[in-house]
Image (cartoon, rainbow, N blue to C red):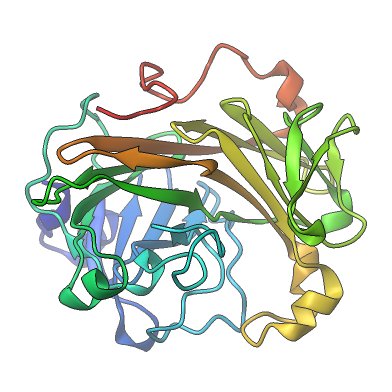
Length: 333
């Protein structure tokens, strides 16, 4: 069982245990996942929040601000915040919903996953609404999150959200994995896979435009929601000669964001120059909210890989999509 991995005797072996529960910043509970080749992931129970993903050389692949505040109820700035049941201000809840501000529990008895995993480095978390949550969003749900690290160092997040309303009512939500990637310099980065697609420009009252470039490059603040996106997007870091590959299922939209200098200076939990070292590319379901009837369950999958840029996105196998490609786009069962 991943959540309660036994701790072998001896310090050295303990360090190599695939799943370790420990304390993080400000004594917050976290879980560390490790693979034998050296890659690792850290997940805080506060927010169900992945804050670190390191490759086999120990290089950090996710950006977390040096000014991030690891103190509830403030969300952690960086890593992979989970936006649920609302993305941004698409509704009347607080910005990005409440899932990222809640303490999740370890799920010791999750229902079986559609595709059994052979990974030993994974953890299952669960979030259920409190009485307080039901006052601001009056819907009963179970949100199960599996965070897994593959033997090759890929990071996989699987969200399963079920409507457990007893009153027969459906509910709708918007969603995003708000992933902050760590990069060498924003001027050296391009995002491929979103060419010719329509997007909503958050800097222009969400007016709709069509992407004209052959890739997205960054020369100023950018905040867009791309619609009807493919299952694979690539983030190419020329200076690092590294490409992040984002594969997703059940998440038709993709948000691309960099705050640039003025907005960076306006954020208290973000360094003035840190915008140069991060880019957000977020697998999301925003334009068409997900609606669940009682008993229905939605699945949203994210798989992140980091590969040498010699395998730039055009050369990556276009047929290789996220594991369990049987997950349909609506992902509701």
